[in-house]
Length: 212
Length: 284
Image (tube, rainbow over all chains, first blue to last red):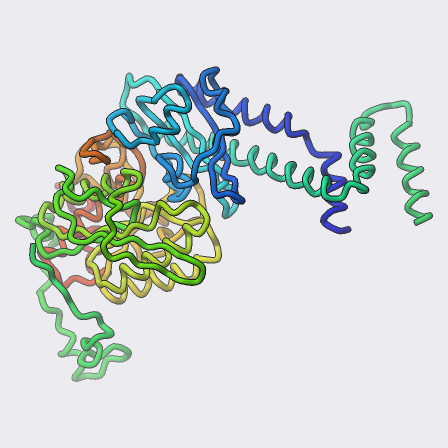
């Protein structure tokens, strides 16, 4: 099977862009809640343009950020991405050069920031940030570990999102294979139906395969 | 600050010393320049030392020279790649593009106030190509024969692993101690996983001189890395957490030890760090 065919079939079976976005949204929502933070966001690396793009944000003020981009080695998020090292920083305001442009575009400048790289296999896919966690206790390594666990989850979600996007774009490039995606999608929807229509459709497809 | 240069094994020393095999008469010629004391204490290791004479390279985002917690920076170099060409700017004026390198430099300075600090900037040109720039920056730094290279960064790219491994071993044989941040997640990244470097993770205590040897590698030492007050851009200070702040604590102590015992090889330096670790002989 060619890559395009696989992609076409996969595009029908894979979750939609919206579903992956919902998964990322749930990661940032939970991260924000667990750390009792003011905000949390996920930035995805766009390797084509070498930029970081806001993909998800857990507070209303930051929702307008989604889709915003900045150069991949800018500020703390950029450092975390390139160095692959998680960082926790308090009093970010004390740093006059802390991603001023990015911070201003978000509408608020955080006092504290936790940032962790989203690593999947050998690739850094993006960065998970948790902003303004209450400063009522010393930071602990247990929290760092928790942040790492969230990062793993977010990295898997980002990887799935990217795969889905690649599959969709391969499909757009091969318009005539769109029917395969639609058939795969329809079959996927019929899974679990008990009226036998899925079996009938599969028998028909088997006949079609024989014919081809 | 006086600068100290020392020949590599390749430049001269190996002609006189038996490098590959040891004949009967050769045994006399490898007498060590200093007698190893019966017991290694912190007092022997770095008592009275200021770091003077030790050359420490910070491979990072740059260093803000003149920061009150950093002071003088001997040289600032920037590495970039254009096409196939590696560009080494030996008088980089960009300073620190993030603040992180300044933070590391400040920690080293706090422990070894008179050491010589050099910045090799390998960050700032974007994510794409960052692995190659890291590799070239490390190569350049090793060629300069620094005593210590502080690397609070790593790459996950498999294609750089063997080249980085080769460079780490070259540094080890040329008496440059590579001190690198470990990952606090189960991630395969380099060069901290190689045994020719000293890898550092964090502990939660506040004493900058408390550090532990880890008998269950790959992470070999744990140093202060939680809620550390560090230098940051614009003459500022921040409170930071991460293995990348633990690493310069060990680098600073390595600079202290080497300023007092410049003849130590990386193997011996690692042994001294082990013997003086808080959970070994340094807790008393």
